[in-house]
Image 1 (cartoon, rainbow, N blue to C red):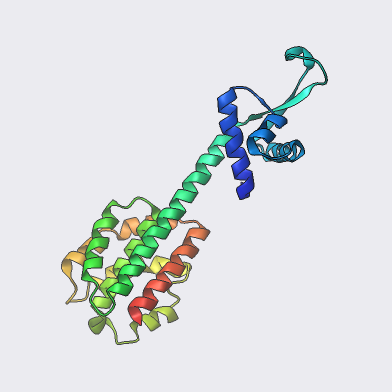
Image 2 (cartoon, one colour):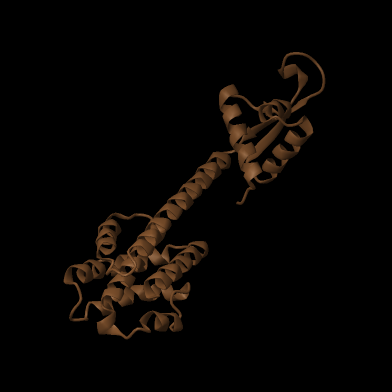
Length: 234
């Protein structure tokens, strides 16, 4: 279920007010809390109700102080808090992805012209501890590319990264091939045994993690890998 940023804000503030009052809320109370007019608040709450995030009921005059017409009040459903938790988690993952992605790309740019050994060592340590499928696969693929870069004189000529592009890497479907690349690199005689053994130990987990990525994450990963290959291969 997708909500606009404004709808997320309304739902979040509604839940905060509901916890404070510990009772169903009239839309005028929500309007005051949000700083909008009552009609706008009512329309927002009805929309959230249509999404299955709120329920409404009419409270007759006999059940409250004063007199007059019955009032419509709103309560959150169980799905409301669950959705906000999920959205918060996605935002946190997006923030962490941006941090990790920029850290790697910056290290590649700074280290251009070197063998990237310090970055490779760092990635090999992080890979073993990484739990996020997107971050894990990004770090694993970067490590494989750096290992290939160090062995470029042995495994191919100066067009190695260009030929990877021609093979369809790193498009979304081609991402699976990097696990096989880690295996292939282990057969290069000059390969760093410590690095290749560490990557080989992760190939099974890599295939599992790749399988857990949704379409959006695969696109992000493919775009990132393309940037890595452009920096390293240029």
